[in-house]
Amino acid sequence: VTLLEQNPRWRLVPRGQAVNLRCILKNSQYPWMSWYQQDLQKQLQWLFTLRSPGDKEVKSLPGADYLATRVTDTELRLQVANMSQGRTLYCTCSAGGQGISNERLFFGHGTKLSVL
Amino acid sequence: GEKVEQHESTLSVREGDSAVINCTYTDTASSYFPWYKQEAGKSLHFVIDIRSNVDRKQSQRLIVLLDKKAKRFSLHITATQPEDSAIYFCDSGSWQLIFGSGTQLTVMP
Figure 1 (cartoon, rainbow over the protein chains, first blue to last red):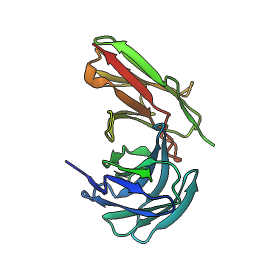
Figure 2: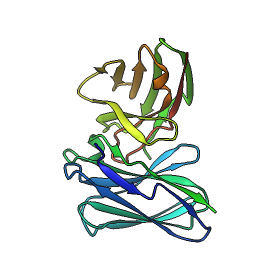
Figure 3: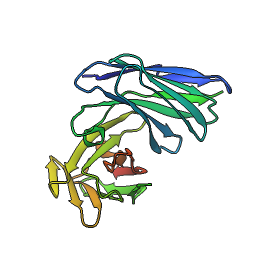
Figure 4: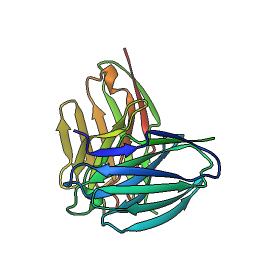
C-alpha cells in the first residue's frame, strides 16, 4: 500500500531555475510529513518536518535553497532553487505519539533532480 | 551537534554468512533506533527498529542489538541472501533526525 504519492519522479532543472515538488499523503494515520535530501554520494539529510496546514519553512544548504509548505493535511510542497548539484528529494510521513523522532518513517518514491 | 556514525561504508559477505553493521550515537536522549534499506535505484524502506527499553530485537533473519552504555547499536543479518544487497542506513533517533552515512552491503553468490 502506497502511503505517499510524490511527483515528479525526475526532473532536469536548468541552472538558475526553481522547481516545485509535490507530495500527497494517502493515509491520515501518518500526518507528520517531512522532506529529506539524498546527495550524489547517497548521504541523507533531514530538511523539514511540517505538521499543520499553513506551516512554512526555508533553509539554505550547500548546493540548493529550499522552501517547504504544508498546504493541507494531505499535501506537502517543496520549492528547490539555486541548485548547483543534483540530488534526490524524498517525502516521508510518520505517526505522531511521543514525537516524530520516535516513529518509523515511510518514504515516497523520491524525485531525482539533475542540473542542466 | 549530535552525531551518528556508521562505521562500515562497504561490506561484502558470501551468501549464507552473517553481516554486521555498526552505528554509534552521541545523543544520550535517543530512545528509538530504526534501520532502513535502500536497494539500487529505489527509495528507502524500514526494515527493523529497537527502542531503548530493550537490548535485543529479532525479526526473522534480522537482529538489532543496543548497548546504551556504549551508545552503540548494530544490525545483524543472518543467512544472507543476494536480495539483502543494498545500502543500509541507521537512524540515531535524535530529535535532530540524523541518519548514518550508509553501508553498502554486497552479498556474493
